[in-house]
Length: 321
Ligand code: SF4
Image (cartoon, rainbow, N blue to C red; front, side, top):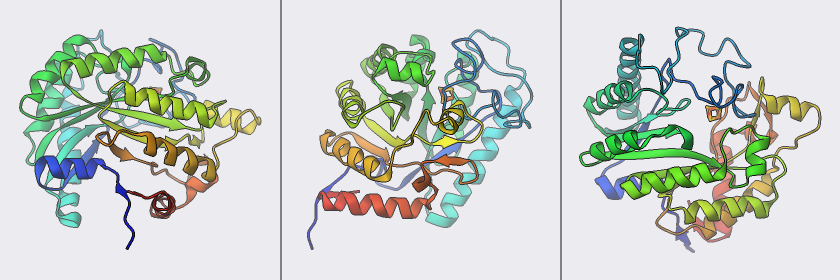
């Protein structure tokens, strides 16, 4: 049977590194927000981001307290620790029972997970690392929210644990970042990646294909720059439009068209072919809740169906995902 080049997925990377299967346990804790939502950088957030600015019910169970870099007080720390314990225990139990996986990275996923005083971050990260089977952390954040002090602290943790920082790159074109109200420019991301890499941390970059006004050439330029900046891992996904976002208004008014499946397959294949082999791939398409999805329509397919289409296309190009 004809085989092709096997892409280094993040799962394969972790298996080689630890000799066993390792899963990411996603965490979403009350109190975290984003400077692009709370008015520090901007209000409302990125145009595709579903957050409380548009959907007041989102997070209605959380107390109305939000962390900031400048807030030294954290009256909900106790509650956050309880949530963290519960989420890690429930998800790891499920991974163990359903897939026999007993090693994990705690994935601080929702909103901006370094946008809090370091004293809070230390308590949360170290609590996660105390859980059985947790080998390390993956921390999703923005380039304008990670201080040198936090980087230094993570470097100390990385001497004992597997530590990853995930930055939203999205696009290297400032005009695109402005269109999506990103609240920072490409130079900010380049600088944050450089600082994290120079300190010795593992860095994952998130890329979105199909941003407003972008050609395939621009999307590939973003991928190429992200590789050049030294990321160790990458996530790709198409731009989704979900209900109750600014982008949903643009879609309704005909100011934005979502990326077609064929366009996405084309740019993804090229981006993967250009990618240096050592950069692991964490995602080639994200799952989405169909009730909120407005476009692209093909993203309403089941995740397994989308993955089958992507795998087939990659195989035609001799790439094994
Ligand atoms: S940076 Fe992330 S959390 Fe903040 S507004 Fe943009 S998408 Fe939302």
